[in-house]
Amino acid sequence: MEAVKKNLTKPVPLHVNWTFCFGGISFFLFLVLVVTGILLMIYYRPTTGEAYESVVVITNIVPYGWLIRGLHRWAADLMVLMVILHMIRVFVYGAYKPPRDFNWVVGVILLILTLAFGFSGYLLPWNQVSYWATTVVTDATGALPLIGEPLKFFVRGGPEVSQMTLSRFFTLHVVVLPAVTVVFLFLHFGMLRKQGISGPL
Image (cartoon, rainbow, N blue to C red):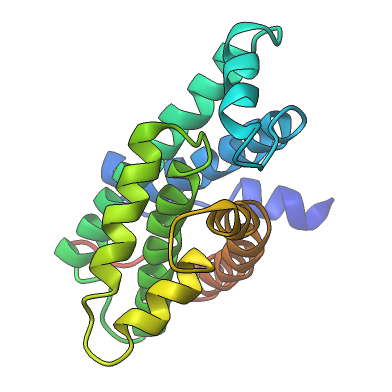
């Protein structure tokens, strides 16, 4: 209890302004995504035959399903924006320099994970827009020299966007990415607590 009280009453440096809130807002949005994502998983079915229909059921039939799905979508969009604004603030303030350089690297990894969340989640409704967007992006992956075609095959789980792709993206979105993100968030916050907030401009 004493440790909690100590952390809650810790003085904030005078130079801290509203731009320092972007990181905290990003974390709050991540928590919103976890809660709404769990609620959506109760009704969502990750198969090519049922995914779209289950999204329609969530939106139109499940009580407050439209609200939960809307919160998930808006929180996802806002999280990408907040993480980018957070990194711009860190860059402008020079907070990426030693001794905080490793925390900057962890932050870049968290940005990549955030974008991966967006990409993997985009396919899950299994509608025309998400299908063709995934097809185009994975085709672009195939254009990479040497590793392009094998990487495209691995991401899709086959030559075309199919049930295997949907299964992979669903697993990535609800198991792999959240677990990896939580590990890097612990690292990020741990280093922040140890090193403190960076100095003024």
